[in-house]
Length: 418
Ligand code: PLP
Image 1 (cartoon, protein in one colour):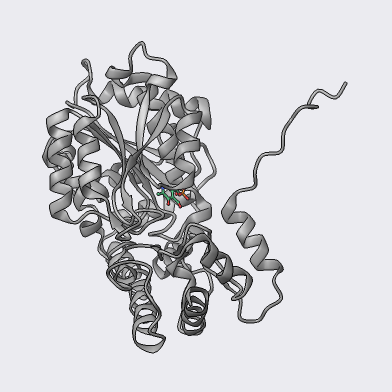
Image 2: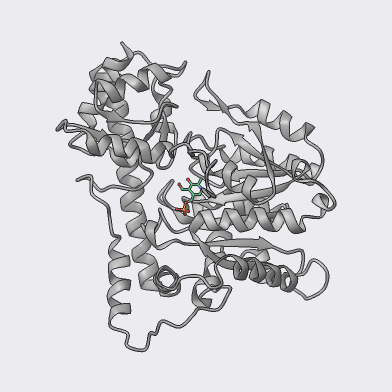
């Protein structure tokens, strides 16, 4: 008997399909602006110098073995990762209320964060999956909804992006926060919103946080780009730290894929903030014990290599400083490409802009991606006529631009729009 007879074809992942099209294209000036991974000015993957150094130290350390890590992860890593996002002098860290577990990069952190809420978030008690709602920005990283649904939550959109201004739909977002039931769970991108590149300003975060506090909402922070957005680790952690200062209940997912260039090593963390440090009800010790159960069921023990590298960088003052420099190299190259593309569109090609504020959004948006404002037809023209590979929602990865291809890309924009 054919026991898998009715297995349907799953739709291919849009980004991977785009990359396959790019690879098969023989055109010599082709450009891949789909991929969400940093590339250097020659279009090549970038191994951070500080990571090279850490790898050499590990290679020469004969004391390292291949035993299992503790279920919660490598202590040198888990003891330091929370300090990076919350700040070493965070009240939550000092009071011992932060519980950090090593995860399979940011994806794994999102997964455990959702599972933990599905099992233990008090307002979800006795509710069906349909009633366990997590509000997610419209749009959001495509995988968020898939992960949350698979973990027992139901993702529902909240207004975030305003296509008319190619910016933040703040009034609608604030209204939604006000009218959502008390103690609702909201996914927030800590910085460098994917896919739009549109982040609230500090003043806007303060308005958002005030409603969280008033309504008792829970903030599910996904922080996949700390440092990568502005070039400054502390600056990119500002929103999270502000929410902690306002005593808003929250968790934070961390990824070291982008900011340490460790994509394939799958190193990240989930950080929960408990109401107190102790073993009693709601205490950090109980939360931690349940995170260990999740980990055990899922992967038993997390992998060592990425944890050793990041653990070393976070605990060594000189390497930490070097890392900050490496992060600046990446972030500033991307910012320079924003400026170059903006200049070409505005001054060289005088390309008609898709929004009311000219091409300002190209320089105002932050992080790996720009939401260009191109419509699906124009995106199609970019791919089919220009051989510039980008998704149909108008998103481009700024990391795919460099000194050698930015002029060609700007020319293609101009042709696709006119
Ligand atoms: N969250 C967001 C918003 C992302 O953009 C990404 C990666 O693109 C991730 C999480 C997870 O990435 P990883 O699992 O590679 O750390």
